[in-house]
Amino acid sequence: MIKYNSQAANIIKFVEKSLLALIALLTIVAVTQELLNIINNAKVELADLLLLFIYTEVLGMIGIFYVSNKIPITLPLFIAMTAISRLIILQGKGMEPITLLYEAGAILIIAVACLVVRYKPKKSYAYQSDEKE
Image (cartoon, rainbow, N blue to C red):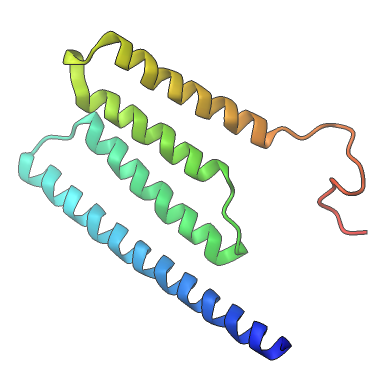
């Protein structure tokens, strides 16, 4: 029974690492395509930079996972904030003011979520501590 669970866990880990490697490879392809697009247009816009920043965050998240087998929850939140910011920029001045408020509110909610997740009380109990006893 234990060997079966161990084999299943190893298969799942292999598939997970393989998919992450594929995502990293495809992200590099997307970065290359975006850079070629910028070169062809001979113009760099803020939306392009934000998209490159999102790609960089995705690669960083994959790199952190390979090193530590953990993904800090704040990284996907940062990616979400950047993506919403890019959406606001792409929609331009023609967007409804209420839509802008909703999207800005979403960024604010995500930023507050980052603060909440990163908050560590000064007084911690043994079961809350990261240290092993």
